[in-house]
Structure formats: C-alpha cells, structure tokens
Length: 251
Image 1 (tube, rainbow, N blue to C red):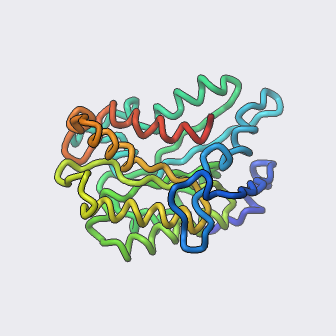
Image 2 (spheres, rainbow, N blue to C red):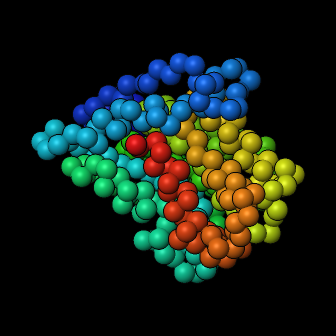
Image 3 (cartoon, rainbow, N blue to C red):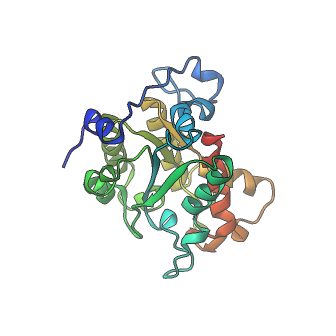
C-alpha cells in the first residue's frame, strides 16, 4: 500500500516544508559528485524541532521510526534483547529532556538478521504506515552478505519511497564488527560507509556516521571491545555513542 505526501499531511494536519540548505560544503568534509553534499545536522530537522517545542493544545505526536537489523532492535549477546539500552531508547530519553512538552513515539521496525533488500520489501507496509516524521535506516552490518550493488539499490529504493511520502530520512553508517580491522581502509564495512555517505549526499538527507565515531575511538587508543556486547553487537556504551550522534540533529 503506497501513501503519498498529501495523504500523510492530511492525516497529521501538517505540511512538511523542505528546508533550503545553502553552502553545504562548509559543513561536510566530503562532497557528492554534483557538489551538493549531505544536509548539516543543525538545519535538517528544523521543522521537526519546531513541532517538538509546541505545547498542548497546539502540539501533536512526533513519530520516529528506526528501521534496520539487530542493532537498532536492541540485540546484545544473542538472543538477549536489551530494548532499554538500545540507541532508539537513548534517543527518546534525551529528547524528552530537551522537549518536555513533546509527545514522541519511538517505533522500532528493525528485525534481527535482516538485510536492506528484505527491509525494502516491507518498507511501505511496516514503516510508512506509522506516519513517520523521521526514518532512521541502519542495515550496513548485514549488507556485507548481499554486496554493495544490491545494498545500494535497496537503500536508494527506501530513500525514494520515504521522500515521496514526505518524511525526513537519516542514514546510519555501520557500527563495528570486531572480525574486521576498523582502522583499515580496505575493510568491508568501510566500503559500505562510503556508499551510505554518498547516498545521503546525493539525496541531500541526513547522515549519522557511526563508523567514523568508532574509528576515531579506536585511533585514539580505545579498545572497541569495551563498546561491544559480542563481536557484531554494540553494548550500552556503544549504543550511547550512536544515540549521541543522532541527537545532534535535534539540538
């Protein structure tokens, strides 16, 4: 079932106005081939932040949907799921401190073990039906098993569907996998990181570069095992790293 932006606007009694972003290259060290670049955090969610500041009876429910694999689902040491220590929950806690009059739904549509091809097939049914204000996409860890070309097609398909619907989108680069050397530029996850950043730049949508955050921790001498529940799942400390980066968009 496909929903267009006008239908969503009617259901939410609002119209999302696009944010015009100038001179993006000043905020992003990388530029897309067309010279546009990803939208900077302080500007991208201005309309959402304005809604979050409203008070009753003028406020409305803000829906944040987290779509992806086991990490946003809250899997720690499989099969244990720690929802209250996952980054979607940490984001909610921080936003409620900043926006005490806001009604915020954090909705997790992630499935452990899933890749982006499967996530794309159910995107309209499981994500857009929640009338999201912001969609977060996190699939890169599992996309290594389908390869870069297939992952690019699936991510771009989800991006196009979300943009047509009228929602904001923030892409996440991968969290670590201890089976790879995060400081190596030849790591599989590094290639997915670059591809995800390029997609964000192409479509001028949000990007949370989790991979770079953990790479910087490793390069500063931190042991990434301290941020991991198991080889491919971050623990509460790791989820806090991701949540802090996401929350930069809401400051």
